[in-house]
Image (tube, rainbow, N blue to C red; front, side, top):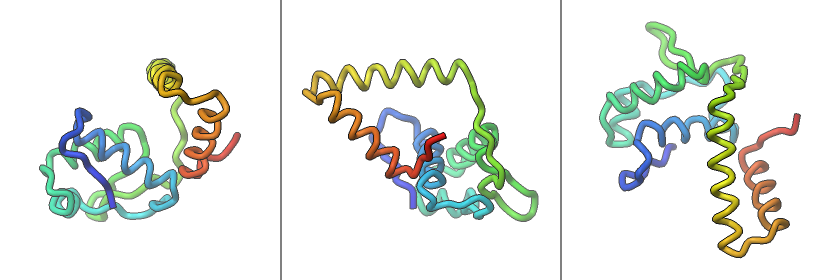
Length: 128
């Protein structure tokens, strides 16, 4: 269900956070869906249970998931995006770096916009 790259420079717990968020955006995971237990997911991905726990804690902090004692961990029913100015600025800088790289790969503005639209559609992100 989730793809983890053991060779990536991105920490495994952050890869898992990203994978879960992407699964929710794509509709693979729906609000109210139960996530695998820490133990089940760690065995399935062959990663340390503490890593899964750290991912779940980060997702809870961001209010993407919630844990109900004795019942399990679930995708939040009523997620409200958090407008964090600091995170927005970091995202803006990362996007800028990607656009510079795309330019040096020879991508035109139109091709970059087409790629962004394609990815937004793939992630089923709505216009607002």
